[in-house]
Amino acid sequence: MKFFFATFLSVSLVLSSSFVQLSFAIPVVPTPTPAAPVPPPSPAPPSVCDSKCGERCSKAGIKDRCLKYCGICCRECNCVPSGTYGNKSECPCYRDKLNSKGKPKCP
Image: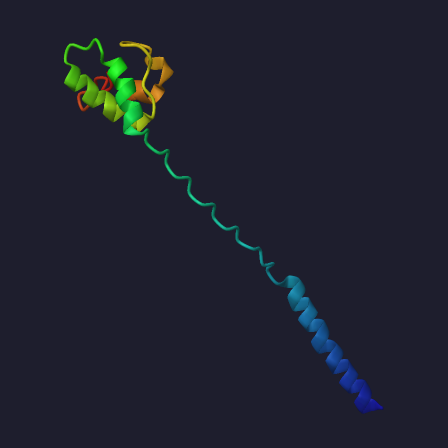
């Protein structure tokens, strides 16, 4: 009987100590999976830029240069302001592009 009681007591102590260790253990928190990066906006098709820049540059004095820079800005900003001059508030990206000298890049 003493042997049975001693065995029962030692098994109880082992089990209770393992439960105590589990209660003090650091909880495992699953790490969230990172979200897929958002791809940059696709550039406007050249045909769209060509038609919009053709309208924008229709009254320009140096048409080739106007079309070149308008096309660059259209592909980067995906928009061209309406009309032949001004209205740059319609397209903030187009308005805010500057050349290396700090002057507006887009016509």
